[in-house]
Length: 424
Image 1 (cartoon, one colour):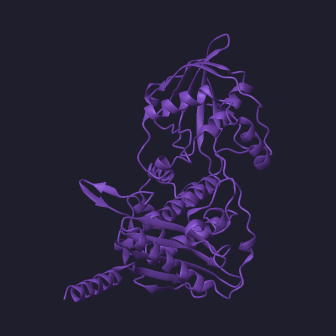
Image 2 (cartoon, one colour):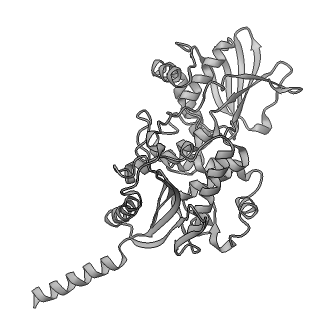
Image 3 (tube, one colour):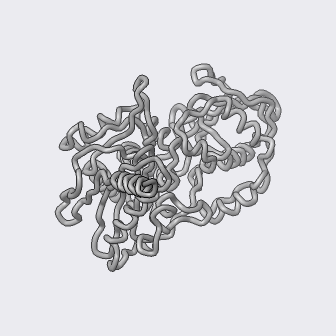
C-alpha cells in the first residue's frame, strides 16, 4: 500500500505541476498585410514586465526625438591663478559613468582646467563609475543617493588615467575622436550642492557637455534591460506630461482598461502599501511597436537601431538579453525583440523579420517562480518564434552589424553657453 500511495501522490504532483506550468496568458501578432491584431486574449491586460521599456522607448522617441542629446551644464568659476570651482548642473542623464568623466576631464584640460578647488553637483546629476555594468545598479530602479555619487567621483578622481589608453583606442575606432593621452586633475573637495543653492558670479563661464544621441542610449537600455536607465528616461518625459496623457492622445481607440503604466522599467511600483505592476493588452504592445517603427522611419532610423537583434551584439558590450535567451540559428538575424521577466510573468515583444514580411508580436506566460518553470516558458516562446521563421529566408537584417555603446560621441566636446545666443 505504501508503494501505491507513493505512486498516487507522484501522479497528483506531476499532474498538478503540468496543469499550471508556464500557462500562456496572451499571444498575438499584427497582420503585416491587413494591420489587424489577431491572437489569444489580444484585448486583455496582463503584466508586461520589462516589455515596459518598449513603452518608455516609444514615449522618448515620440516626445524628444531619436537624436535628442542630454546637456549637462559645466559652470567654471575662476578663483585665482590655476584654481577654479566647477559645478555640474545635471540633466538626469542616466549613463554618466567613468568613461564620460574621463572625457569631461580631457575637455577641461583643453581649457587649462587642471586644479579644481570645489567640484559640486546638483540633484539632477546622476553618476556611477560602472553605470552600465554594475548589475545591482543597472537592474534596480532605485534612485542614486548624493553620497553614492560623491563616493564614486572621489574614487575616480584618484585613478583618472586608469584604462585611459584602452578607452582612447575605442573612441578613435568608433567616433574617429582623438582624446588626450593622459589627464591631469587635482580636486580639493567634492560635494553635493542643490540647484537652488548654486549661484554664478560675474566671472563664471558655462559650457554644455552633450551625451550621445538618445537612440544610442535607448538601444543600450533595451539591450541590457537596464531598469535604472529606463526609470530615468521615464522621469525625464514625465516632467512635461504624464504617460497616460501621451497614450490617450496617440491611441484614443484603445480603452483605458487595456493599459496601466506606472513606471519606465516594469519593476513593481507601490501605491500606498499596494504593490502594482505595469499592465497592457497584447494589442497595445504591438500597436506601440508598430508606431515606434513608423516614428523612427520618419527620423531616418530603423527598428534595429533602437531594439536588440538576436545574435547581433557587439563583442565589446556582450550579448543582449534577447540573444542570451532566444538566440538560435533560426532566430539570429530574424528576431528584434525586448525580453520581460518579473515575479510570475515571462514575456517577449518585438518584430519577426523575414525576406517578405515584418510581423509585430507579443506573448506572455504566467509562471511559477521556479527556475524550471521559467525555463519552460522561455522554451515555449523560443519554439513559437522558430516555428514562424522556419523555412523562410531571412531579411537583410541578417547582415546587420551593431555599433558599440559610448555615453559620448564626436558631437559631445564642450560648447560655450551664453545667455544671449544659447549654444554656439
